[in-house]
Image 1 (tube, rainbow, N blue to C red):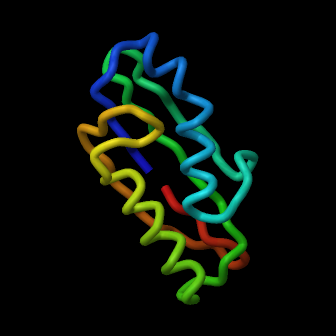
Image 2 (spheres, rainbow, N blue to C red):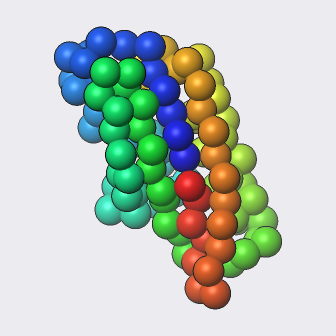
Length: 99
């Protein structure tokens, strides 16, 4: 998952927890399932992964990916304007990883 926000650094920092919470809620997981791979601070671009226990190809996995895509491609997320958002799903033998 990559999300780019149109905000200044202080706005990003003040909304960061709510951003993570909304990402977790969109896939019915807790914040601990999120791995933040990088944050490009000046552009407020976040690259993260979300791990779920949904089986590959299941309706749950499809729904989670759809919900997450809707969240990161919306016009705002956690009270921050979204410039761009992308979602890609990969799987392992036991879990779905949305990156």
